[in-house]
Image (cartoon, rainbow, N blue to C red; front, side, top):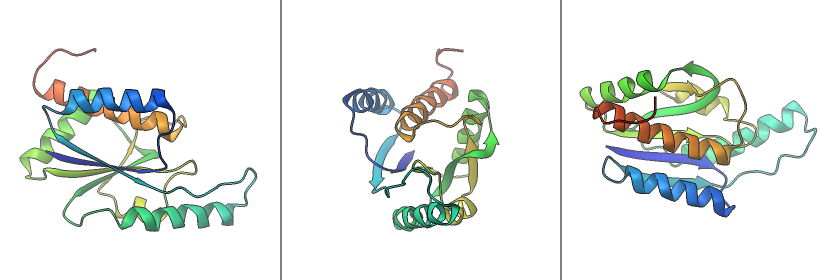
Length: 159
């Protein structure tokens, strides 16, 4: 399976980079992972809703340039569908059965994703109704991807 993780913003802090590298190493036997980072826009505190939409749309245009047409696209969205880890693993197993071996997972910036990206996604997935920093979300996503491969192989992992 070829997975692309498409994110707004870069990981700068060493501890996030180290966590990311650890999960990429753990995932190497299961899938090819490509990380694509697009620039984020500065979002001033107290920005108007119109400015926030403009920022998300600018980031969305950058994101859309990196989404291959033949990929199954999962947009991480706080208001999306929720799944537990076993359901997430089953969804990936089903993609494999359908011959969909190229998947792009998208993490937005601090304001979330542009509506155009959300509407074009095959699945809008929520990990929680809570809001997480996008740097932490990247590590959580990688951990859950690792977990789903372990589940689908019938290998032990935390319950």
